[in-house]
Image 1 (cartoon, rainbow, N blue to C red):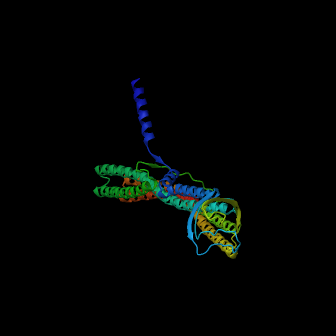
Image 2: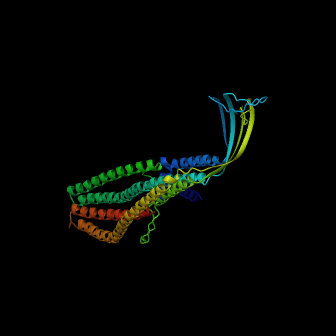
Image 3: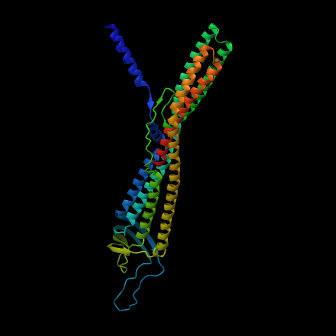
Length: 420
């Protein structure tokens, strides 16, 4: 019963330790880097700015109120040149006073307000797409650091195996010396390789620390050498490529902004119909011959039509069409360069895939050579130094295999980042 309890506690401890072990994936690093990027707050700023500007544009539909007050003195006033006995026609004073309040309401504006709102929405959309292109470039930086850490992580695992193998060789050579099969020089050769392996570990751990620090700054998450970086899954089917880059959406958003500006130009030549009402108090009132303060009121409908924009409308529209053609040219150049880049990256993937096919066989053959070298050393037919060369060759074959695997995965995700 006691042994079962101890076994249960041991398994529980291992489970807790396993849960605490931090693991991270490439997608998680990309998401953390995006959320941690300072410019991400600009999305909220763009949205709020758009909403405030749209709210201001909508207020043009509300009645517009104004108040005007004036006092004037004029050199002459209206007089009626009649001279009839018993009839006295009043003459207005030369000083006149007036306070007028006016309310005006748009009935139809020819689409001007709607066009202004279209420009606001299209401009905000273009700003968001521009920000998306900046954030998209961040993914490439994260990928480079992630695969750098992943490579060193795998190399350190192999380095541990090498160090354990060198320690076994050290113990074997020590026993060989005791049996007279080897000498002190053979042991020194093993110690040199052990020291070199230690130096390699220092270099790897230093590089790993640098990568982890930069990746921690990008993601805003504390990543250490205890963090396990999950190797991304891969698919060798790279024949079908769909391009979904944010730059393409940016080009469309820029053209939509120009279309909105063209609509605004066209609305500028349309008439505006509105209603108005005025109420005032002044001397004189509406009756110019009544020389005293009086209240007055008038209202009605008015039409205003500015023909001045007709002079420049045609050229302005042509200018906007040229701007759209320029964007089309930029888009075509971008896709052309992208297709060249995609072709090169597909060739890189094929190269690493074909190279990896021979790695396992090279390691198998090198392992046979190394095992044969061990047997020859035991029989005194080979020196320890020569055997260590075969061990180094085996280690290099394993390191090369790991390098090719990481390069293959990296090239696949580089293609993904290029296309989507």
